[in-house]
Amino acid sequence: MRLYYLKSKEEFNKLDKNELEEHEKALQKLIPESEKNFKFKGFSLVAEDTVEFDVLFGNGLSYPNVNWRETVNCPITFFNNRMRFALMIIDTLGRILKDDKVYIMEQVTPLYKHLKNKYPNLIGSEYFDASTVSGYINNEGVMHQDAIRLSFNDQEFKAILSFDVFEHVPDYKKAFMESYRVLENGGRLIFTAPFISDADETQIRARLDSNGEINHILEPEYHGDPMSSEGILCFQHFGWDILSLFKEIGFKDAYAVVGWSFGLGFLTPQMIFIAEK
Image (cartoon, rainbow, N blue to C red; front, side):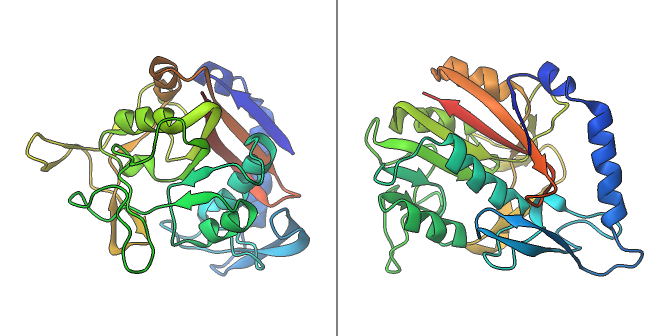
């Protein structure tokens, strides 16, 4: 298992390029000569068993390209590469005890259900729309939270978990500030989001104007949304500047964790961010 802690683009660029190139060559050898889904044998940490991961074509890419991040699914838990890596990081670096109070920015997903079984005091939420007040709970028991207007008390949570959410928040800086507010001292924000590894600055794809209208800067990009079949707009892809932003907000430390492992089914380098209050 390769695992690196990175605090800048310069540190990322110092990763062994030969090793990464050899890893990429090994990946290409896995791709079949015709477009058909295939399997890869490895150990699933979340399932605690050796499995044959399902590698699927599609997910926004066409053959012979594979969206390694969003596939390599465990046949027991159905969690993909990205999710399984995130769960490993939570277990190893989250410093979360069973009875700690934890907030995750999702609630109607298998990932939420899995973590709720591990952490009974886990609170989850979804985003309904701009007119709904944070803290509202619908008839199905699903809570609405707006990441820039959380209804929680100051220093309420030991950890905040967010997986591919912040890219959909127009004012992501305010969202990070809200996360800081509701975290305990010593708590951690752990999240994933689309990230451009060679970008110094975050790439803004769309903005909201003063009237709440969306101004598209780049071609609109929509991602899957468990609350809507229409998907949800991506406002930005993050760059290395977010690590400095965390420090400005008041976090005592912030870094990216990058890792990969053929044996564990993490077939491409995965990146997850941790900000410590």
